[in-house]
Length: 71
Image 1 (spheres, rainbow, N blue to C red):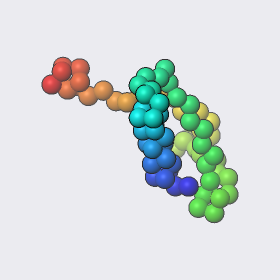
Image 2 (cartoon, rainbow, N blue to C red):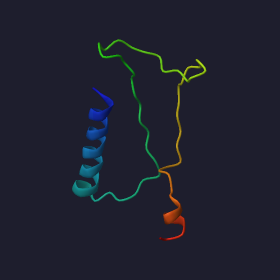
Image 3 (cartoon, rainbow, N blue to C red):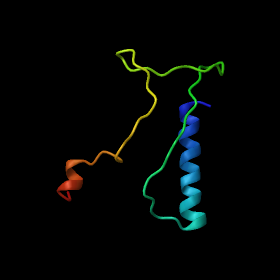
Image 4 (cartoon, rainbow, N blue to C red):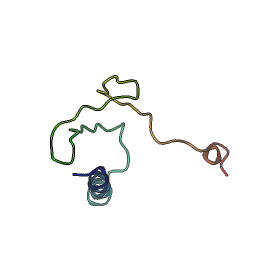
């Protein structure tokens, strides 16, 4: 699948959780990806320095100044 297809599938499942199961909050989420090329062959994701990427963490979406100042 392309990342766009995965993004859409995630959106649809999150929508299903909200609407079908009345789920409104979560402590977090874990997403595992199996990177491949367009032929389905495994690939290794690397930083621009050449170091292999094995995990990426986030604390949630970017908060804009408008959010902080209630604009």
